[in-house]
Length: 391
Image (cartoon, helix red, strand yellow):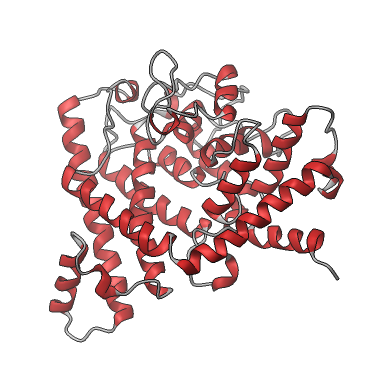
C-alpha cells in the first residue's frame, strides 16, 4: 500500500543522540531494526519464557518466538494502514528486550529488590537495554537508535505524563519509572504525547499475539480445554464455524484453525477501526498523530470488549493456574536470592559487571538488576545452583 501522509518518515527523523553519517543503502529506521536483531539482548530472548520456564518443554512460546509473531502481525497492520514498515518492525522486535528471566515473576522480584532504588519496570528496562547495557560501538553505549524508535519503546501504550509532567495511567500512583525519567532528562522523548502510529501498531500487535498464542499454549499444556472456550465472545462462534465446516476434525487441527481465524478477525478489526479513526482525524503528519489526544490505532468497541474477556480468561485459567503459580513462585524466590547475593558480594558476578562499583548503593543495585535482567532462564537457574546448592 502507498505510504500515507501520517506515516513516520525516516528522511525527517529527529535523529540519534549521537550523530552518525547516514547509510547509503538503508533508511534510519531499517538500521534500527537491524541493530536490534544483531543485539545480544535479542539473541537472549530465545531462552526467556513467556509463561512456562524453559524445562516445561520446547513446544511452548519463548520471548523470541512471541517477538517474531508480534513482528509479523505488526508488519501486516503497517502495510494495510500505509505506515513505515521498518519503524514498525524495529518497535515490535524491541518491545520485550527488557524482560528479565521468568517473565512477570522475575519482574515482580526485581521490582521488590529495587523498591528503595527506583523500582524495576520491563518497559523502562527495554529503554535501558538499548541506550546503556548493550555495548557494541567504540564511541557510545547502547544502540544509538533514532528518536522515533526510542519514543515508541517508551510510549507505545500511550503517554506517560500529562502536559505538565504529572504521571498518568499505570504510572499515576508510583510515578514515571526512574530509568525513563532520568533518560528523558537528557534526551526529551515528549512523554506527554502519544507515539507514532507505528508504535501504536506494535502495541496492538502484541495484544493480538498474546490473546491468540497464549490460548494455543494453554490448550497445549492442558491448563484448559476447547470446551472452556465455547462461551467466549467471537471465539465460541469461530469454534462452531470450524466444527460445522470440518465435522470430526481432530482437536489439534481444530486449535490451529481456531487460532488462525481469531488472528485474522482481530487484525481485520484493527484495520477497520484504525482506518475509521484516521479518516475522522485526518492527520497529515506523524506529529499530528502524536498530538491527536487519543490513540489512532486500536480495536473497535466490540472487539475491545472481547479482548478484555480473553485476557480475563487467560488470567484466571492460565497465569493463575496452580501449576504455573508453583513454578513462578520458585522462580521469583531464585531471582530475589540472586539479587541479594550479588548485591552483597558483587565479585560473584563476571568481572565486567563487578568492576567499578563504589560506595553508590543505588548504582550498585541498578548494576545488579541489569545483570540479572539480561539473564536467560537457564543461566539464572545455573547461577542459583552454583551459588546456593549444597554439595
